Image (cartoon, rainbow, N blue to C red; front, side, top):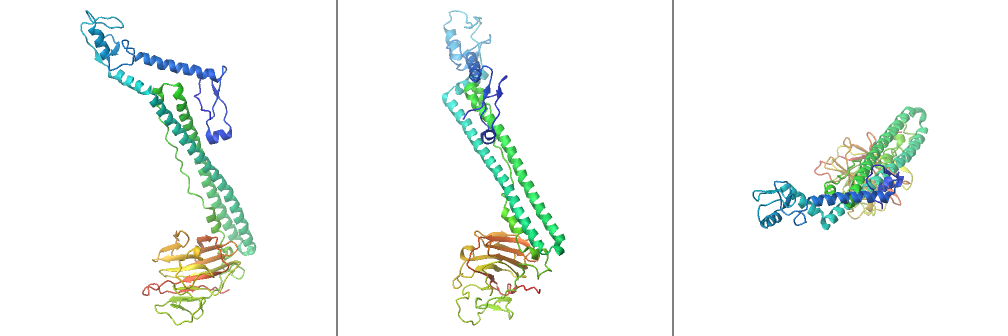
Length: 471
């Protein structure tokens, strides 16, 4: 990898290719009438001449070495303390300056601490170890900046890809919404326009957010390039500049770019992939699909402590088990119950009234779940459920659990099962606000699932009710 050199008078830089400027931004060549090698040679000779001149100024004329404990005579010439004292001790008569021969009435001189400090600095910088250390420092800084810049470029590419994915998903949702509205277009034309405007606004907001991220990343890339050029130039100066000048150059601090959290494109899809016809126009229930299903509880699956209403739409928990016949379909360990209906295909939606209960579980279960053992509710065991605990703690029982924060306490929960797309989605059925969606829900057949949880001394005795709507 060629290292960039500082731009000199009469020296121009060759234009960077797109790949070079975006990934590395390092390849800079000299173009001079007499050639790059001659320009570099002239510069190095000049720097070496300056360094040699400085060493000569800091060299004692007696011992011909860098000053040791330098002192200054009245004639302003400098010598090592030990050297001038030895020279004067050999003078037969009046003492004088070894350089200008000026005579002095006595052996007087003054310590020169400034010269002493400069000499010590030159002595330290002249060591090979110091050169290696400084070279390693600049190389490490350059490597770190290169990696950070590569990361910025990757983040920029991800943001650009997200815009493409966002446009694709938005187009799919746009088509789906139009298809749903086609069945109800005469009545729902105004609502259709409102929903499409909302989708377009959200798409625009997300695009603006992503474009803002791209602008931030581009600025970060620009600043990183400047920092890399500065560092590269400092590294280049190791061979052709005074070490005192190089050491005084600080490595520029790392560039920090704040971008938005990772965009969840599935969240946009989930929000507009619910029972759209029901959301947009509740009154046209006879034309809505999927409409709220009129489910009933399956008495054969109910735990012995559960009491079902006569119409099999409400269930409460009792402290005493009721006498029931043995059945392999019955839950033995937990107060659970399934619906009588099972689903293998299509889209199905139902609503459950949870009211003011302090805890509950509901959702979808695979028909094949183990009902005799006490099984943890999780997708791995064939359960896709929402859970309430302690009156206000809502959870999607995924892996790991996801804490939910609905805008208002849930009193009625809607559940959407899409067998073909393997999704189970949950909504606040009072305002159709999307709560959570499970993906990759796979089973041979699915059953609506309900758990009242224990009554806890009548604090949680309110029943769960399956909502039926008159068509």
